Length: 428
Length: 79
Image 1 (tube, helix red, strand yellow):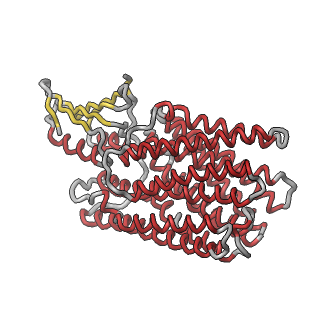
Image 2 (cartoon, rainbow over the protein chains, first blue to last red):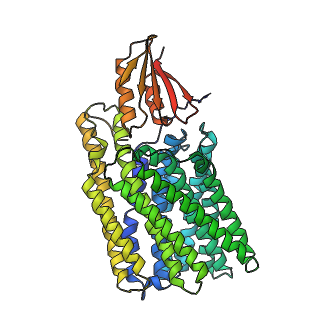
Image 3 (spheres, chains in turn red, cyan):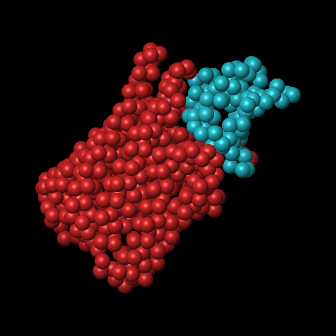
């Protein structure tokens, strides 16, 4: 047994994370616009301007926006240490990220170097501010748990991904001679396999048992998984650096990464099947879909090693990871985090009677509609490399998902404001 | 839900409850404990957001991490 040191510093006001959350769905609309205005079938080539633009709308405008907003709230809750100077940090991250996430896809889509040259310094500023604030929060945290380690490793991976991303964007804008394929592969590995994967794993250690009432993740997994993924990613970087001499190392590190990712997915599915309250829940379905998509992404990624000439296998693997795994989990987590935030901030604000039940803040019907819409969008995306018309279905799915998510978030904000008005509180 | 020990320590076990039920049970229980008594809470995860509310409510508390990964918190009215 040990005595834990105490921390009473305040979590940021609800407006801090909600600002990020309410802007994020608008980037799904922008991604839809990029896909339908692209030439031919954007899914034919992973580096087509339309797919590159749509992907960055999703990874920067949607996913990074949500992850950076959620981190402002997650850090004080799971490691007991808020980001320093929360309002300043918010403005130094939110505005540059918002403008950079608008300019970069526009630069790719229109082929305008000037837009790329505006975007990369803004994005650099947003991420440097975010990374610095996160590291300061981690350094001051009294907690010693696996989630803290996972967050630290994800931030380190993000740092590498951002440096490479800035280098690539600047290179595209100036036409510099760079090893673009190698740099892009390393950028994608660190961003998706590092920052996204490690953060999702670390947060799942807390969120899955807490909200879905499952047993805890096994201790051996909690202790070893995120450091193992991080080491494999570093080895993967090294193997790319010395290509083609170390092809075996590339295959081994890819195999190890997907083995670790699949272990996480399988164990999460097993824990969810042993949950204590067996009630149907849209959030749980988003998580299960995400874990199954992660398993399938691994199978397709390994298939690319056996059949390297079939490009579409790699495209399907990337779509399964991005839309199937990462986006499903973000939707699922948002539908738990947002009602909890509304409830907690009302309670903290002194409302001790008439606080709505957490389950009533966003109606379950809307979450299920979103879930089925998301499944349809994913299915269309998986068909898109072979069926040109599916691009329109993907765009329609992203458009409707963006609108639906925005609507449900506005419902939550409206419940918060109405409750505050009823009791005469002040919105932060 | 709350059990009373012979030494005036009140016990509350909120393990296995989804958020925000542990928080709600703890806040309700705090209203019932007399001055000088301790509410001994057994909980799955360290509740950092609760500390802020306890601090603002002028409660004193001490948290102990247990070997099984759960936590015990002794909460009492501050001086």
